[in-house]
Amino acid sequence: MASSQDQERIEFESHASQMTLDQLNESLNANEKLIRLFELQKGAIPQVLEMMQSVLQQELKKKQSVN
Image (cartoon, rainbow, N blue to C red; front, side, top):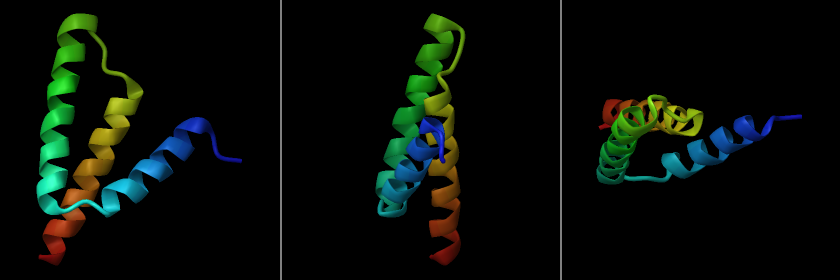
């Protein structure tokens, strides 16, 4: 059985796969801002933001290689 983190990743991968290049870039930029904010204020990055960043970057690479 998948853990809740695995399930979140699967759901987010599905969502990201439906995004356009522009949407992926916008989401990456927004996520990077959140990561910097958490680093400054909390000194740590939530795992969910790291997962989202990874998925968005992978999906962007896939879509860029197709175009």
